Amino acid sequence: MRSTRLSDRAFRTGLVLGGVVVSVLLIAIFLSLLLSSRPALVKNGLRFLTGTEWNPVTDTFHALPFVAGTLLTSFVALIIATILSLALSVLMGEYFKKGVFANIMRTAVELLAGIPSVVYGFIGLFFLAPLIRLLQEAVGAPPYGVSILTASILLAFMILPYSASIGREMISLVPSDLKEAALSLGATPSETVWKVTLPYARSGILGGILLSLGRAMGETMAVTMVIGNANDLTPNILGPGNTMASLIANEFSEASGDVYLASLIEIALLLFIISTLINVVGKIIVNRMAQAS
Amino acid sequence: MNQGKPVLDAAIRARLRGDGAFRGLVLGLSLVATVPLLFILLFIIIRGASSINWQFLTELPRPMGETGGGISNAIIGTIILIIVATIISVPLGVFAGIFLAESGKTRLGTVARLSVETLMGIPSIVIGIVAYVWVVRPLKQFSGFSGGLALAMIMLPVITLSTEETLLMIPVSLREAALALGVTYPRMIMKVILPSGLSGIITGILLAVARGAGETAPLLFTAFGTPFMNLNILKPMASLPQTIFVYATSPYPELQTLAWGAAFVLLVIVLALNIVTKLVTSRWKIQF
Image (cartoon, rainbow over all chains, first blue to last red; front, side, top):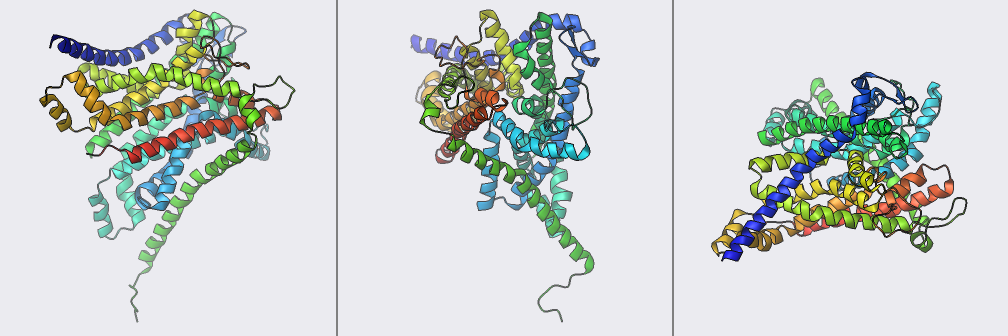
């Protein structure tokens, strides 16, 4: 009896330990990023967030061009992805809920979600970049092919399966009596979607968009391969740029000097904080929507 | 007069036209979103499959300028990295998942769940930096182990959350029956709860492996890559995703051909894992 009680105790302790380890892990990640970026935090100060220069030769490291690059690529991607994923979610959530076509569509979306980022980057380099080059030639921009727009379009397709599946889930949460009421009053299916389904699912869809934004901001490889890696602050989406993640991917293994390395880790810290905030807010909205229905 | 057809005035006809247009728009945009990518997938399969042969799978990369050569080091490297990551993340992830399912409402449970959900959203490149700080910097050496650790941190939240979700679906009556028979708590968990939820847990692990196998960013400055065959996890190690990255961004067409082949191998592995997962869930879905 005693030994079983003892092993009972040990087992419960083991479970609690599992819970403690995952809780501590997050704090440990945050603290190691903070501690490792100390030399940069001291040297760069607050100029890190407002300055526009990134120059390893003079040991000047400012993050603004990359924060702006990250926001710009993510927002452009989000606009494209939102339009397409709304269409996909309405299609999968309203028009084709069951049947062969619905299954094909759903499997395709799941398949696309499974493709690794680096393969998307390769695809972007070979299929998308030449198209963008034509566009750049048409408007008289330098025809690199790689650009912020290239990265945004690629990103849009990458986050699409994710936001479409959240959107479909949110649309499926809309009570069918509401939709039936609208239909029985003589509304056409499209009017029902516009005036009943989408307004009802609005906050959930918004949460899904925020979660997709979190994904887009952290996406590294595909963006690194097609964004062109230019460290200047630029609003020109047809020109090359850099995001926080792609900057780290490009420069980290070649960074020499303590401050250089620490500044890259400081960028990682900033990326960690921004994407965590966006994720938490998005999660709260989605959960509230799921609980409300 | 009206032969069976309802009389529609102009306003209603306009609304019906609008409805049809909307339906067409939704269908059109959905096809724009999926069809090009599926074609490209097909392209990779055709292009990649043609560059696959025995030599490609079993030989090492040749020095620059020579044609031919293979990616055996990257295939073996990816397998080793995944094994290391699985050994680290599965026991911890499953245990944490059981903890969340059993005492998720306690204060520690709430903190742990918040932490796991946050971990899920951390960009993989940031995880790579953390593994660099924890392992590469102290050992002053890029290593397969640090890469495996980074992948483990990416796989962990996937495993934990799917384990929790699975276990929460198991009815209370099962556990009450076991406890009523005098079974101790640990035995109840190990012999009743875990086996009933096994398919769900395995699904989660497979999904996590599929996700980890395709990750490149966290390996850039941890496993780092090497042109040689390396089985020692304390030395730099090659991997499929990273090989694709290096070859795809190189200006040499021969290397790009190798990259298509490597992309094909990686896609086959990842998609096969996803399909197996889907089969597991639909065959052995827990139903009570």
